[in-house]
Image (cartoon, rainbow over all chains, first blue to last red; front, side, top):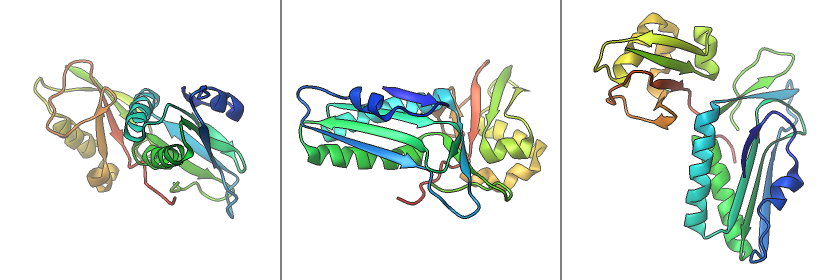
Length: 131
Length: 83
Protein backbone atom coordinates (compact mmCIF):
# COMPACT_ATOMS: atom_id res chain seq x y z
CA UNK A 1 0.00 0.00 0.00
CA UNK A 2 1.04 3.52 -0.76
CA UNK A 3 -0.82 6.24 1.14
CA UNK A 4 -0.50 9.98 1.51
CA UNK A 5 -2.94 11.14 4.12
CA UNK A 6 -3.88 13.93 6.49
CA UNK A 7 -5.20 11.60 9.18
CA UNK A 8 -3.07 9.81 11.75
CA UNK A 9 -1.38 6.70 10.35
CA UNK A 10 -2.67 3.38 11.65
CA UNK A 11 0.64 1.55 12.10
CA UNK A 12 -0.98 -1.86 12.53
CA UNK A 13 -2.83 -1.44 9.25
CA UNK A 14 0.44 -0.68 7.46
CA UNK A 15 2.11 -3.72 9.05
CA UNK A 16 -0.80 -6.01 8.20
CA UNK A 17 -0.69 -4.88 4.57
CA UNK A 18 2.71 -6.56 4.10
CA UNK A 19 2.04 -9.83 5.97
CA UNK A 20 2.66 -12.98 3.96
CA UNK A 21 3.06 -16.59 4.94
CA UNK A 22 6.43 -16.78 3.22
CA UNK A 23 7.78 -13.71 5.08
CA UNK A 24 9.93 -14.55 8.07
CA UNK A 25 10.68 -10.92 8.92
CA UNK A 26 8.78 -7.65 8.92
CA UNK A 27 10.76 -4.49 9.63
CA UNK A 28 8.81 -1.36 10.49
CA UNK A 29 10.18 2.18 10.49
CA UNK A 30 8.35 5.11 12.08
CA UNK A 31 9.55 8.62 11.35
CA UNK A 32 8.30 10.83 14.16
CA UNK A 33 8.28 14.56 14.79
CA UNK A 34 10.88 15.09 17.49
CA UNK A 35 10.84 17.65 20.24
CA UNK A 36 12.98 20.62 19.37
CA UNK A 37 13.16 24.02 21.06
CA UNK A 38 10.63 26.38 19.49
CA UNK A 39 8.96 23.60 17.49
CA UNK A 40 5.42 22.53 18.23
CA UNK A 41 4.68 20.69 15.00
CA UNK A 42 5.80 20.19 11.43
CA UNK A 43 3.73 21.19 8.42
CA UNK A 44 4.13 18.83 5.47
CA UNK A 45 3.35 19.93 1.92
CA UNK A 46 3.14 17.44 -0.93
CA UNK A 47 2.91 17.39 -4.71
CA UNK A 48 0.57 14.46 -4.43
CA UNK A 49 0.33 12.93 -7.92
CA UNK A 50 4.09 13.04 -8.34
CA UNK A 51 4.71 11.78 -4.80
CA UNK A 52 2.38 8.82 -5.33
CA UNK A 53 4.05 7.99 -8.61
CA UNK A 54 7.54 8.33 -7.13
CA UNK A 55 6.67 6.20 -4.09
CA UNK A 56 5.13 3.49 -6.26
CA UNK A 57 8.22 3.34 -8.48
CA UNK A 58 10.46 3.40 -5.42
CA UNK A 59 8.71 0.45 -3.80
CA UNK A 60 9.02 -1.58 -7.01
CA UNK A 61 12.71 -0.68 -7.31
CA UNK A 62 13.35 -1.60 -3.66
CA UNK A 63 11.61 -4.96 -3.98
CA UNK A 64 13.74 -5.77 -6.99
CA UNK A 65 17.01 -4.50 -5.51
CA UNK A 66 16.72 -6.30 -2.17
CA UNK A 67 14.47 -9.22 -3.05
CA UNK A 68 11.92 -8.24 -0.43
CA UNK A 69 8.39 -9.62 -0.72
CA UNK A 70 6.15 -6.69 0.21
CA UNK A 71 6.60 -3.05 1.12
CA UNK A 72 4.13 -0.39 2.21
CA UNK A 73 4.68 3.32 2.81
CA UNK A 74 2.28 5.77 4.43
CA UNK A 75 3.17 9.48 4.71
CA UNK A 76 1.24 12.22 6.43
CA UNK A 77 0.69 15.71 5.07
CA UNK A 78 -0.57 18.81 6.79
CA UNK A 79 0.29 19.51 10.44
CA UNK A 80 1.86 16.72 12.49
CA UNK A 81 2.43 17.49 16.19
CA UNK A 82 5.56 16.59 18.17
CA UNK A 83 5.42 12.87 18.89
CA UNK A 84 3.27 12.14 15.85
CA UNK A 85 4.37 9.75 13.13
CA UNK A 86 4.90 11.49 9.81
CA UNK A 87 5.98 8.39 7.89
CA UNK A 88 5.53 4.64 8.39
CA UNK A 89 7.30 2.01 6.31
CA UNK A 90 6.75 -1.72 6.59
CA UNK A 91 8.91 -4.20 4.75
CA UNK A 92 8.40 -7.97 4.61
CA UNK A 93 11.10 -10.39 3.49
CA UNK A 94 12.00 -14.02 3.87
CA UNK A 95 14.83 -13.07 6.24
CA UNK A 96 15.54 -10.07 8.46
CA UNK A 97 18.79 -8.96 6.83
CA UNK A 98 17.19 -7.92 3.54
CA UNK A 99 14.18 -6.47 5.35
CA UNK A 100 16.40 -4.21 7.49
CA UNK A 101 18.55 -3.19 4.53
CA UNK A 102 15.59 -2.45 2.27
CA UNK A 103 13.78 -0.43 4.91
CA UNK A 104 16.84 1.73 5.63
CA UNK A 105 17.58 2.27 1.94
CA UNK A 106 14.05 3.17 0.95
CA UNK A 107 13.72 5.70 3.77
CA UNK A 108 16.82 7.52 2.54
CA UNK A 109 15.36 7.54 -0.96
CA UNK A 110 12.00 8.85 0.29
CA UNK A 111 13.81 11.82 1.82
CA UNK A 112 15.90 12.34 -1.28
CA UNK A 113 13.44 12.16 -4.16
CA UNK A 114 9.81 12.22 -3.04
CA UNK A 115 8.32 15.71 -3.44
CA UNK A 116 7.30 16.34 0.15
CA UNK A 117 8.51 19.45 2.00
CA UNK A 118 8.20 20.39 5.63
CA UNK A 119 8.14 23.60 7.60
CA UNK A 120 8.53 23.99 11.34
CA UNK A 121 5.51 25.37 13.12
CA UNK A 122 6.20 27.07 16.41
CA UNK A 123 5.98 30.36 18.21
CA UNK A 124 8.77 31.76 16.06
CA UNK A 125 8.74 32.49 12.35
CA UNK A 126 8.41 29.27 10.31
CA UNK A 127 11.53 27.94 8.64
CA UNK A 128 12.25 24.94 6.50
CA UNK A 129 13.74 22.06 8.44
CA UNK A 130 15.83 19.26 7.05
CA UNK A 131 14.54 15.78 7.75
CA UNK B 1 -0.43 27.31 -26.23
CA UNK B 2 -1.02 27.19 -22.53
CA UNK B 3 0.53 25.17 -19.72
CA UNK B 4 -0.12 24.99 -16.00
CA UNK B 5 2.71 25.97 -13.67
CA UNK B 6 2.83 24.51 -10.16
CA UNK B 7 4.94 25.88 -7.30
CA UNK B 8 5.63 24.40 -3.90
CA UNK B 9 6.98 25.28 -0.45
CA UNK B 10 9.43 28.20 -0.59
CA UNK B 11 8.66 28.98 -4.23
CA UNK B 12 4.91 29.09 -3.58
CA UNK B 13 5.50 31.46 -0.66
CA UNK B 14 7.71 33.75 -2.76
CA UNK B 15 5.27 33.96 -5.65
CA UNK B 16 2.15 33.98 -3.50
CA UNK B 17 0.39 31.32 -5.56
CA UNK B 18 0.74 27.58 -5.99
CA UNK B 19 -0.61 27.36 -9.50
CA UNK B 20 -1.13 29.58 -12.52
CA UNK B 21 -1.59 29.29 -16.26
CA UNK B 22 1.17 30.44 -18.59
CA UNK B 23 0.81 31.16 -22.29
CA UNK B 24 3.81 30.48 -24.51
CA UNK B 25 4.85 29.92 -28.10
CA UNK B 26 4.91 26.47 -29.67
CA UNK B 27 8.33 24.89 -29.32
CA UNK B 28 9.12 26.52 -25.97
CA UNK B 29 11.30 24.38 -23.71
CA UNK B 30 10.94 23.90 -19.96
CA UNK B 31 14.14 25.90 -19.47
CA UNK B 32 12.78 28.82 -21.46
CA UNK B 33 9.57 28.76 -19.44
CA UNK B 34 11.56 28.81 -16.19
CA UNK B 35 13.61 31.76 -17.44
CA UNK B 36 10.39 33.64 -18.16
CA UNK B 37 8.93 32.80 -14.73
CA UNK B 38 12.17 33.91 -13.04
CA UNK B 39 12.08 37.18 -14.99
CA UNK B 40 8.56 37.84 -13.71
CA UNK B 41 9.40 36.81 -10.13
CA UNK B 42 13.01 37.94 -9.55
CA UNK B 43 12.97 36.73 -5.94
CA UNK B 44 13.06 33.20 -7.35
CA UNK B 45 16.30 33.82 -9.22
CA UNK B 46 18.56 32.83 -6.33
CA UNK B 47 16.85 29.44 -6.25
CA UNK B 48 17.30 28.70 -9.96
CA UNK B 49 20.31 26.41 -9.63
CA UNK B 50 18.80 24.09 -7.03
CA UNK B 51 15.39 23.97 -8.72
CA UNK B 52 14.13 20.59 -9.94
CA UNK B 53 11.78 20.57 -12.90
CA UNK B 54 8.96 18.13 -13.58
CA UNK B 55 6.53 17.86 -16.46
CA UNK B 56 3.37 15.83 -15.89
CA UNK B 57 4.82 14.45 -12.64
CA UNK B 58 8.12 13.30 -14.08
CA UNK B 59 11.50 14.96 -13.55
CA UNK B 60 12.82 16.37 -16.82
CA UNK B 61 15.82 18.23 -18.18
CA UNK B 62 15.42 21.87 -19.21
CA UNK B 63 15.65 21.09 -22.94
CA UNK B 64 12.35 19.19 -23.02
CA UNK B 65 9.85 20.88 -25.36
CA UNK B 66 6.48 21.66 -23.80
CA UNK B 67 3.09 20.75 -25.23
CA UNK B 68 -0.38 22.20 -24.81
CA UNK B 69 -1.86 21.36 -21.41
CA UNK B 70 1.37 20.19 -19.80
CA UNK B 71 1.69 20.57 -16.04
CA UNK B 72 5.09 22.03 -15.21
CA UNK B 73 6.25 21.89 -11.59
CA UNK B 74 9.07 23.96 -10.12
CA UNK B 75 10.29 21.93 -7.17
CA UNK B 76 12.52 23.10 -4.34
CA UNK B 77 15.11 20.54 -3.18
CA UNK B 78 13.50 17.81 -1.12
CA UNK B 79 16.63 17.85 1.10
CA UNK B 80 18.53 14.73 2.10
CA UNK B 81 18.85 15.71 5.74
CA UNK B 82 20.08 13.86 8.80
CA UNK B 83 19.71 10.15 9.10
